[in-house]
Image (cartoon, rainbow, N blue to C red; front, side, top):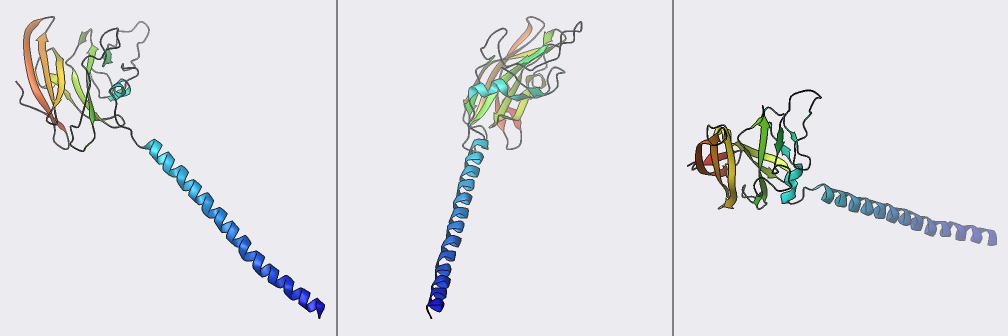
Length: 206
């Protein structure tokens, strides 16, 4: 009789212990999943493009220009190969010669009307021993090139240099001068760069 009672008590104890063990394992699994989910959300936050800063222009991708292939700037300059004994390949940069100042102060402004600021900058390039018309570039977060305007397509001159750039009413306001040679046929211009929703266009060119 005592043996039977002892056997029944043992079975009851097992019935109580097993669910508790199962619940502990389930709790541990949920805890691990929660921790994993937390890490995933943190990683996603790190991968999300951050708001643009002016200095992002120094490492931005740039389009093909002056016969140079498209590439990414390094410290404001496009790395170009210069074969020993070969011709000078020229340059492509957003900085003034031998300095750390931008050619034209970059502009941070919401040009696409999405509530986020885009970054605008100017690229100067050279090939064949002379500089070519400058490019006005607009970037979204990344930085990722949203679009650009080649001033050589707007004013037919050997050189076109941006003299000022600012944001106004959701557009980019430009002034520049065009000229041939060192200082011939000098003309001053102004225009508005507008985002249509799919590309940049020049408006009110004067």
